[in-house]
Image 1 (cartoon, rainbow, N blue to C red):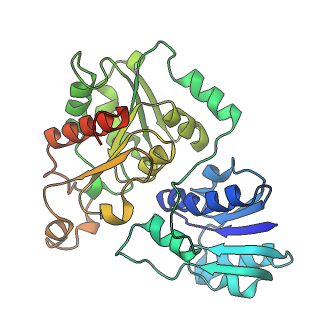
Image 2: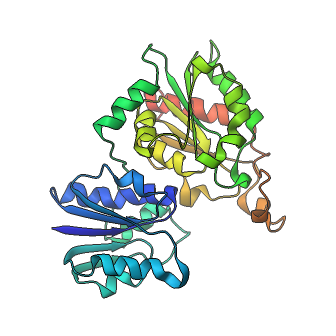
Length: 320
């Protein structure tokens, strides 16, 4: 049995789509998988069981990336074609079953919508499969001295949804305090290559021996393996937030100008906390998407710290 799985250019959406891929991998052991996605997201699929091929689809003028994909896969017979980008490609390829996402439904979470697209009444958590070499690399990057690991995602692909660096610094100090949630925890700071400068104040606030910093200088599956070793993740709405949730660790997502009901972290122990302003209140100011100034100023540190406390308590079983 062969599956053609067409998914997103964006990292976060691609991670969420692994909830669908997980269904096929677990329901049909041995199914051979070909993934077509954007180049940024491609690395997270390298550990998929029975992976035959990853086809990267950088956008081209006049939809040339779809023509490229068609030429690469048209000579194969596909038992299942799943197209989560809503293109017409699935209908012009030889196959038995075609499942195509028809636009975004903002009434439900994206994971729920994708599950409905393939006919599932109950959705699965996203999952990113790692390899032994990535887990070994993670063990080399993180200390093995018994300390807890606090993972922080202090950046995002748009400044509007980025909580201020000084607030992250203060939150980290509260969590790492002797009477905090994770006393003296080691810090894992993660982000995209072009986000390191924005995160520099947070990085510089920590001693080198107390931090592991990864901003594009390690494989994404190594980042995933590091997240799997972490005890708590706190970060802005981003692809890395979704990776943390998929790692199965307690994950707290911070939201302001984006909708947590559609893109909240999805995993066994997750929560979100949003700015005191609603999405509508934030956006009524005008075309804020043109600006990289934070729209998260109405999210207080105390609110995030309390949400992290409740999340860890729920994970430990003391809160239901």
